[in-house]
Image 1 (cartoon, helix red, strand yellow):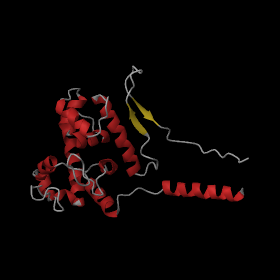
Image 2: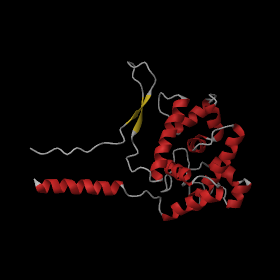
Image 3: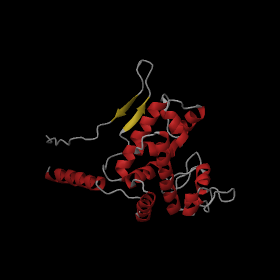
Image 4: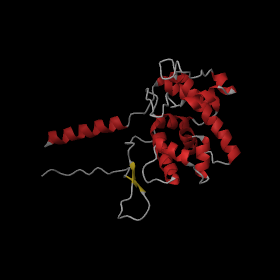
Length: 236
């Protein structure tokens, strides 16, 4: 019995140690995020959350064709590369010959991270002009579905193309535009907390639930408990 208890204690201790390990993108990317946030005067915590949410620092390629740490599409990357600040950063254009290859400029971690911070800085400037509240969630959503798409969505004027874009970027069946914005905002906040070592829990603590025919009310979010109490049951 004593051995059983000892083994159980070791398992629980190991689980606690693993769960408490600090999250990191790797030393180089962590440093690039820090430097980019300082250079463009954006929140480092916000930027870490955005990079974590985009999930591209290890080479992921999105179904939309987005690449790199900040998951840039060709259209957004090339537009930003041709701005004065993009040129000052040294962003190279994506061309038919380098697109999707090892030479695709989006693969350069430092440039991509700085471009992500630069885009966030530009979004903040545009938020001020449009009266959009400068929250971290809005910065993520502008990066995710575009500034104009976010602006129309907040005004309740999302068009067909906006809806199509939302569906390509996480909108679930049965969601309204407002519900999508809330859902993505909650997901982003969760990733930001993990990326900044504010929590060490499983990310999948909420899911979108589509209402059944017997349920007349709107779809809801199911939020799983975040804190559980361990109870030791004495073996008989």
